[in-house]
Each structure stands twice: as structure tokens, then as C-alpha cells.
Amino acid sequence: MPSESQEPVLNIRNLNFQYPGDIEALRNIDFQVNPQERVGIVGPSGAGKSTLLLHLNGLLPEKLSPSIPNTDTASVSIMGKSVSEKNIYQIRQWVGLLFQDPDDQLFCPTVEEDIAFGPLNMKLSQEEVHKRISESLCSVGLENYEKRKTMQLSMGERKRVCLAGILACQPSILVLDEPTSNLDPRARRRLLGILQNFEGCQIIATHDLEFVVEHCNRVILLDGGKIHADGTPKTVLSDSVLMKEHGLEVPLSIQWKMRS
Amino acid sequence: MTENKTLLIKHYASEFKIILVMFLIFTGLLLPVSFWPAHVCLIAFIFIGQSLIKIPLSYLFRRLLLFLPLIMIFSVSIPLTQGFQRGWDITFLILLRSTVAFMAMLWLIHSMTFDEILSSFQKLRFPPLLLIIISFMFRYCFILWEEMESMRTARKTRTFHKPGMIENWIQSAHLIGMLLIRSLKRSERIHQAMCSRGWNGQIHFLDKTNK
Image 1 (cartoon, rainbow over the protein chains, first blue to last red):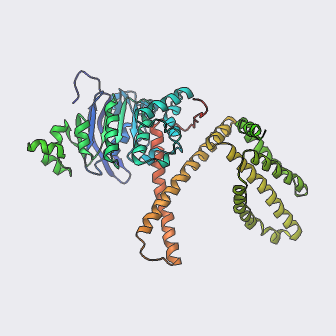
Image 2: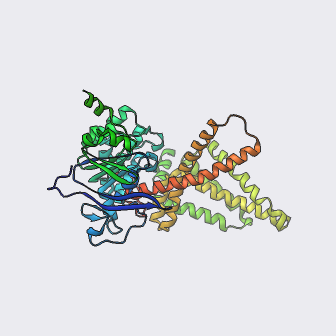
């Protein structure tokens, strides 16, 4: 949970968002995230989880305001800077966003080209870019994968390459959309290990509640675009009435603990 | 000796390769039909260049077999509208010019990677917008193909009889329509993924020799 002494890295205030056709996706979203906090965002499908994550990187709304001088009026601010057209490129360096489908993220023919995409956009030198490719591949356990074709990788490898592409930008905040979907247990465990080693703040939207129990220290329950609960995994995920009300289930590990 | 020549061609400055290919194509385009031996010389020159970078003959002939009939289809109607002698001259000229251009482009794409070609065009100060469009087109081609394959597989799994010709056409039309919609959505997501990693409309290339 946020402690009073720390400066929040993410501050969302009264965020509302509607898709075209008056489809309300987010309503009065209000929360803060502190450095090194690992926040799990849970909720049924269509709750607004992915929409919320897109706001953290300035991908939504599609048209950002040119500049907001006073952060008090901004809906989303990262490290004290509002997500606006003026700050967007700096914010995107701070926030690394992992998409749900790795095929959306891997658009370059080879692994090294894809990982280099972010660092090259940061205008780093070629030497530094190559260094970051090696380091990030090493951190996700895919050494010597530089020349591999992205289309020939397994789903687990694709997810890890996507993560390497983000880590190569050295973000302070990791925003992950369904990181464990379509992963076998070994790939899931490996991903968990990589994320445990990441020292910055993490915001993870997922249906994998066991993953939240194991990895996160805070949970936000989102449904119908609204926050319904915010607390530790133990308090939020063990509330069977709340979970049932929002189309979720108490994770087995918590159920076992409650029984014993 | 051949090895040295091959290395020499491979290590030519990328920009020079592009200028040379452009020069060959434009020379081919500017020469009139009466200079057809010059066209043949150009084709022979390109062929030698292709042999130096070891493009297999079988590959070359297969590509020409696909390309030339296509050009013939377009140019064969010219004698009907332009008079017999003049029409055949134009057809012959189109065939010569397109063969020069086609073979020169084959030479180029076999001696350089796609990224090298784009970065060389960038160094030659080609309009960035044009390069971005080419770069996206290349990347999205594979995505379109992948989408189409997955939709075709999904269709096959739920096809329980051999469709007739008309039914097949209707299904294909639906497939193409859906392909357009799905690829549009997919391209939007890819664009979002690019923006999230700092894409600002400029293309940067990884120097693969710099390690």
C-alpha cells in the first residue's frame, strides 16, 4: 500500500474515458502508485483494464492536449509530469508497456531489430544499442537470439522478446497487459522470475490471480470501468462475496489457506 | 579471384549500388527501340553482376517466367490500338525496358537487406514519408498474410463439404472483407506498440556491422 513518505510515480485523478459510440470504459478512476510497488489490476473481461493501461503510456486518448502547465488539472501524471503532447516522449521512456498479444509488439523481422526499435528511437549510439540488446536478451534468458526470426519463436519466447524490447529502454515503470496469458507453466515461472528481478514499479493487468498472489503487493479490482476494491492481495482476493459479485474466484492458494 | 570480386561487390557502398541500379534503369528507359542492342548489353551487364553475387540461374529464370508473361498480357494489346508495326515496336520496347528494370531490382534486393536499402535511400535524401510508407508496407505484408492464413484455416475447420465455384467466390469475398477490417485493427495495435516505444515518425536503422 502507498506510504505517505514516498512520492508517487503514478498519479491518476478522476480519469474518465469513453470509446466512440458512448461506450463508457473508465469512470472516476483515482489512485496513486509508489515506486517499487507491484500493483495487480484484476477484473472480468471488458472491465477496462487494457484501456486503463493504454492511458498510462499516452496511447489513449488518441488526441492528447498540447500541454497542461498545472499537473493539478491532469488526469494522469507520471513522475510528476502530466501525460500530454509536450511530455509524451519522455513519459514513454519511463513507462514500458507490454501488450497482451506479442504479435502486436513484434513487427520487425529479427529479434535484434525489434529490441533495437525503442533504443534507436531514444537516439542512442549504435554501440549503446547493441549493448542494450545483449543485456536485455541476457536478462530474459535468451542469449544468442539476436539473429532469430521473430515469426519462428514460441509464444513464451515471443513474450520474453517483447519484454526484452521494453527492458532495453530501461523504463522506471513496467506496465504489463496479461503477461501470463498463453504461457505454459515453465514459461510462466520464468517470466515471474524476470519480473521479480525488476526493481521499478510494476502495474499488471491479469486474470491470473495466482500470479497476483505470488507477485503483487497491491490489488485493484476494476469492473465496469470503476474501481471496486483497492488493497493487499490477501484482503481483496479472499473476499469471496466481492469476488463472486465481479465474476472472479478466490484463488486456490488462498482457499487452501482459509481452509487450513 | 571470383571470391575477391564477390567480396568487392558485397562491400560496395550501399548508396553507390542504389545509384548504379537507378542509372541502369533510367538508361534503359531513355534508350529508344532502335538501340535494342544497348538494352541487351545492359541486361548482360546486370546478369554478370547477378552471377558475381551468386544468384542461382534457376531462381532467375523462375522469376522471369513469372514476370514476362505478366508484361506480355499488358503490352500485347498495343498492336491492336497503335497499328501493327508501331504497336509491335512499343511492345518490344516495353519488354526490353521492363526486363532491364526487373533484373536490376533483383540484383539490388539480393545484394542488400531491406533495411540497408531503406537506410541508403535515407542517406540519399529520399522523402522520409515515402520511406516510411515503403517500410510499413513491407512489414505489414507479412501481417496481412498471417491474418489471411489464420482465417483460411479457421474457415477450413468449419467447411464440411467441397464448396462450389460460386460458394467459393462468396466465401473468398467475405474473407477479403474481414481481412481488411482485421488488418486495420491489427495495424492500429501495432502502431500503438510502436508509439509506446518512442516512435515519433522517424525511422532509425540498426547498424548490424557495428558491434
